[in-house]
Image (cartoon, rainbow, N blue to C red; front, top):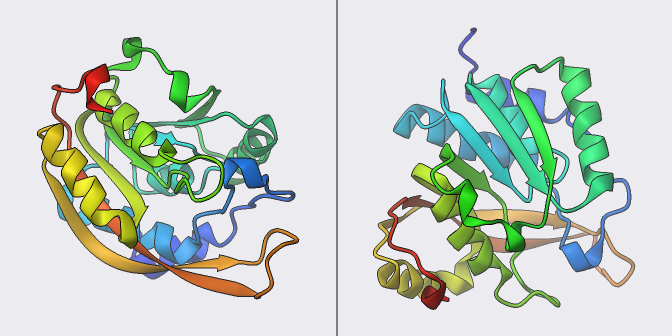
Length: 218
């Protein structure tokens, strides 16, 4: 497989179709191609956690991170999301890019069973931040991801929640490393948005998976 440069990867991801009618309750904001490319390129080149690895993309939406992982040589990618409409767009993207190493599962991330433990080498996600009606959902996604991953979890979280996440990581005895501080450009997607776009300060974090999580952790 041809080794993609960062700009080439970003250019490819700009062709990925995203939400036509995003759903507020699901906090559906697509991962921007530039951020997705930077995330995946770092995961691939710095940590070697994509090529020939099994990848899960939690809350995958239209598949930006799954498709990017596939382009970087992942062994197999599975996107998981609760929304059938998003997965329909995801499936169309898979067909457009003619990818054979990507699949999807419709499910509620908050209700995944322990049978998914240690199923994937790497979990990559842009979870809901829990800023509207879903307080704490970011930590539910993170806990689930850590249970599913054999090696590492890569995730985006609001910088303002960093200390809370550090506390949880310490409780779970999981190594946490902030790889970058990013500005997540959120375009106006809903009627109540007054500005064309808003920059949100976001941490790109790597968590080393460790199997000491219990229901008491949350």
